[in-house]
Image (cartoon, rainbow, N blue to C red; front, side):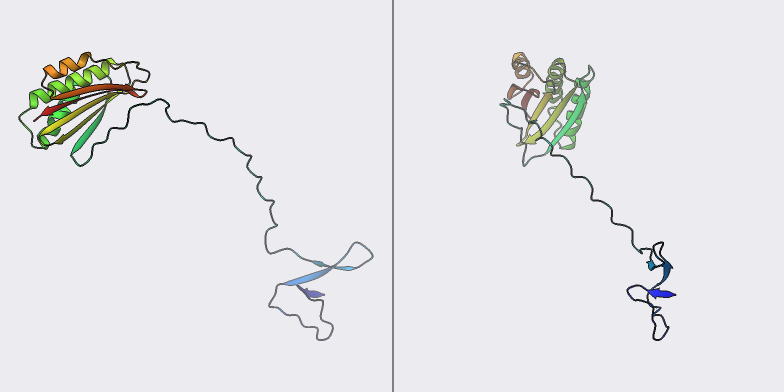
Length: 190
């Protein structure tokens, strides 16, 4: 006997609606009853995924006690380099700064810019960090050269380098120390 999903076998006409896949009646193991043999045309419903356990809040990661504000250089040309804190870094930094100043059209202060850069990077390398960041900016025929030693835990800003920078032709210079290292800068007339 043939049955259609949702209907019993037709006794009147003996015809079957073939628009739906045919199902068959099979004898049941209990008392000879007829049961509809059906295989579903969709997969069985899977259980929902387990809920994620509640996680504790993330720990605070910002630096406490950093008195230094971020250095902002706006509305002027600037360049920067990240160098390994090695014995050769001051000479490489000097070459980078002089080349960039030439690209910007400044050719008069090559010696002073190179000497200032070398002194700044040498002092940053002496702090003992793993790398040194060098930043250069220009405005109104002046160059700002900044070196940052990335050595955490330095206690006091060393001001011995300031006299050397002034002797090399810096119009203005300074240094400060924070948890992320020491920052030294010099301004040079071009």
